[in-house]
Length: 91
Image (cartoon, rainbow, N blue to C red):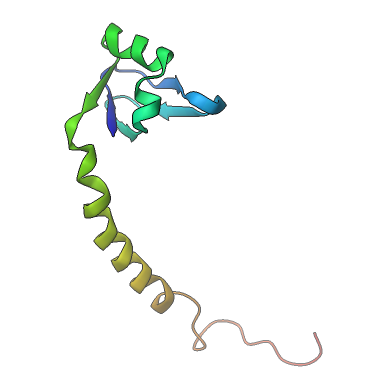
């Protein structure tokens, strides 16, 4: 479930379990449905500071291919044996 900070200033959203979500101006973040029903979050929604976006259900499915592509690029872009400093002798 996505939420949007509708203000022009960064805000701190208190979540259940003592967790905190910090959102920059006009930025979105993800919270659980349980957190959306939490009284401090509901108060910010009623004040118009936060807005719940309906597109939250499709983001995990669209994020999976992106994470698969990132995982594929990670090892190939990682450490390589060619180039860099070559250490010799006793270490």
